[in-house]
Length: 192
Image (cartoon, rainbow, N blue to C red; front, side):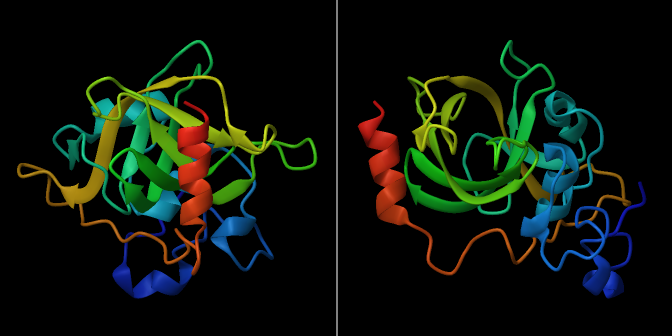
């Protein structure tokens, strides 16, 4: 797969790898979470989702504090054999975020679709986003599973990053114009 972010002048074609032929929007994407997260965040990491955290070391800054446009790298687990990656679209409050990601919930029985402004709730004891619950369309609320996460990969190159690593440019479609903040809070705190 070629990198659409190799040349800033090609911003109009930045969605080429993630948006299927004929689609007008990143949100029409159907496929795996990794190509979607790469295109939505601008962070140029390849390979299974569970490898992103280690691959980011020395290339992109990483941490435990959410920032819009950052990628949350989920750990490999029995439920997520290949891990998962999602892009932060909104920060609602200290322990509640909205993410935009692909290949989580089913749409008409089919996985792979993109979802925008999905509730993510930090359930870790230390408030470090190492354990999270994710809104699941199939249940119309937060799922009952708790997923381990490594942390956030920011689109800013690490201090000693190779010159080829450029600052990421997240998609303008990460969030909607009027996300449901109240619904997100209700989803998070009602599921405690």
